[in-house]
Length: 245
Image 1 (spheres, rainbow, N blue to C red):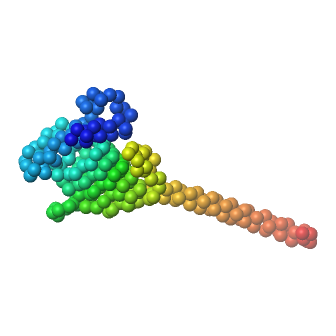
Image 2: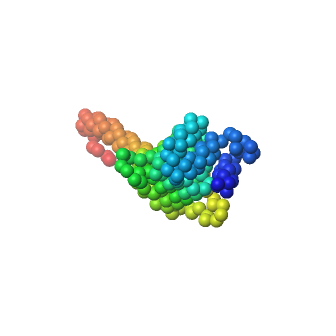
Image 3: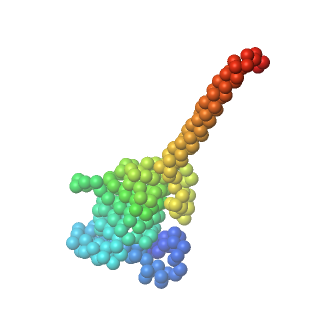
């Protein structure tokens, strides 16, 4: 238990530059408080003392605004940053060194029994407001973009963005498997497929506008040349002058 607590505290210092002291982390980090209380609630849940476990979970939600069902399985080094609005379901499983930001939901998609919540691999970063719904696996070293809604399995070493979530990067830079993995927290630098499509459309519109202007100019020149040619013919006919052109 104390080994897990030490690793959870260490995760805060590794991934939050705002953490200044051990006392500050112990007293002022609701994500850490929620994890500690969950581990206690999970102990009672495993002993089938469900009411006590749910009561501890309920108190934790009231104090931290983070709801973790006591049945959820959480590995070492979980860091919940800010944490308000985080919901983790009963059959969810979270690996080691996972980072979760505010507003994340690890939920189910119906009233089915058994495993109905996602399994999160190691070294995964789940950005603010992301929703992962269903009984599937998010592979190791993956990143889920802010506001994404993930409804199907995610391969390892992938980046997912959008609604519904789509894998936009796979097998990119791998996370070092050493004792202190280099967890990539830059969830603000994710690809935006919608913006890429819009940029392509804007490029095509500019190309079409340029082509239309060229055609309008040619048409205007043609209309201007026609009356001038008619005037020349009229003058030559009036004075019976041969065409020297």
